[in-house]
Amino acid sequence: MFETEVMGTLTIEDIIKATGGRVVYGNGNSHAFTGVAIDSRAIREGELFIALRGSKYDGHDFLYKALEKGSGALVNFPPAEPLRGKIIIYVKNTLNALQDIAHYMRMRSNIPVIGITGTNGKTTTKELIASILGTRYRVLKNTGNLNNHIGLPLSLTKLGDEDEMIVLEMGASAQGDIKELCGIAVPDYGVVTNIGPGHLEGFGSIEAVRNTKLELLDTVKGVAVSADDEFLMQGLSMYHGKVVTFGIENKADIFARDINVRDRGSDFLLCLGAGREVEINLKVPGTFNIYNTLAAASMGAIFNIDLQSIKAGIESFKGVPMRLEIKELFGATVISDVYNANPASMEEAVKELVRLRKARAIAVLGDMLELGSYAQEAHRKLGEWMSKLPIDIFIAVGPLMAEAESLFAEKGGQSFRAATALEAGEILTGICREDDTVLVKGSRGMGMEKVLQTNKGTGNAV
Image (cartoon, rainbow, N blue to C red; front, side, top):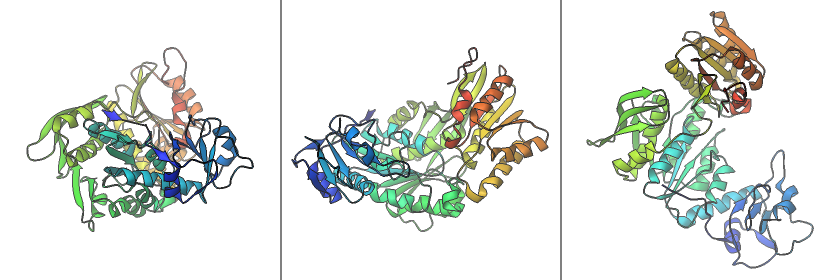
């Protein structure tokens, strides 16, 4: 598979064209920077430092540190003294300049761009698409989940002259976010994985979530969507581009059948229509990862990747760190899904806990954040739903998850409350037995990975 993080040539002249800035120190329009950086601690020799202003920091405060290795900087106020051999470029707004540089590089390359959005599964789907397309093309993708107004353009600045495809995850926490990212990346094709109640604090309603994700449609000429997400499908009524559907339950262009879900993966027949089908041995667990795979296969079909290469791309994928990883702790099976959480992803993870349980099922769940006025109701619904499932022990972490624990306990379930993930880890260490099945999940801000930071005996699950 071809991937690269080597940046293409970016001269001072290019930067001036892209940003409208001006050189205030240094000279030489032919000078080429070897990359772009926004962190003075991680900058490498020859890179251009972009001094971003944030709510908690100002990159200008670290300018001299950055220029120890960097060969130049983009600033919105110049340093008091010039630095010998360093190039300083003035722009009105450094964040806008980063985005303008990314847009300039994308448009100059003129290669296909795929944008992936949705409530859940974006990062996994992005990695799977890159893996499938990477069997034939050299692919640039977001690093990790750098998917916002800073991370996405920063990823685009890694674009190299040899890249042939760009695959970009696009995140949103408020209306207009996807439109902004599309303005930078100008995707040709898109994937919308699903629509669910995530980041409601910024959106206000599930309808606003859908409207925001579907801002992608204003730019792309083709989109892949889940036929099993009826709420999502309803939002496509006015779209006139190419639509490729994927699914398991409803009729779809790309679908899976003969599904056999195993503890650490699944086997199924991937069907691309017209008698084109291939057996898949997926290495990551969960039915929802079959949906992510179908979404990725849809892009493979759009770009005419042959069946065996689609199969190779899927089967070489081994998962994304912190997302539904299977570990062991004191002889128990642990489902570690600690990157983030919203009601939809929490439900899927709990279903996986129930499916995989051997002896006792233990749920260690942290608050689902950024749900706004829906937060209390969402947690109470979770607790009531879980009380009807074969879950033996519930360890609730945080004040919101305490709402879920109350309803779970009212129905007779054994439960504990913890203020922090570390405290929950101590509780889990005291009760965990061999052959238990444990789910650990919560929003990123809860730091749920700390639940598994134990050194007791052979139970190192880190």
